[in-house]
Length: 167
Image 1 (cartoon, rainbow, N blue to C red):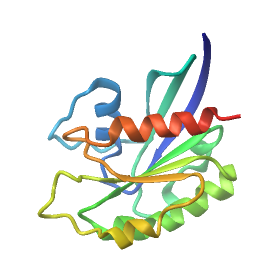
Image 2: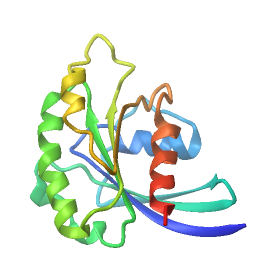
Image 3: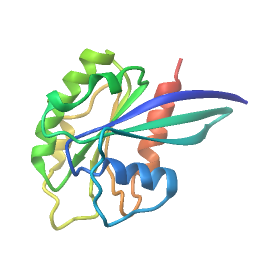
Image 4: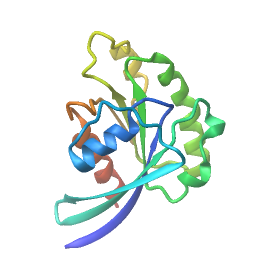
């Protein structure tokens, strides 16, 4: 069985749920307590894709209020990007364009997931299907996720792992 390693960066503004998504994926847990990430936190999870074992190195980057705050040095060497927006805060979607440009300038074209997180907060949800529809692209996967319930989390990470391991 082949074992390969891939670096994934979690990218988004403050409070979108990047850390919570990683914790749900790696440890199947969710905490109501908010802890702001300082710098970068690295987690690891091994997943099976057919006969290939993929060791995912998940770089959880500190959220930034602006694109200039994202350390492009943290992005280098990434095989994929996991963008996170908060479905209850439409401004996080607006910030995504600048983050995508930074990633493109730093890495070129790499597979990416865009997670519209906090789907469990149905009353507070503010992103419509048309908002999400504008995000679709050839090597991107857009879906609603909930770090709290786990909805869509494994699906998003496994899709990205599959894209990163394609020839």
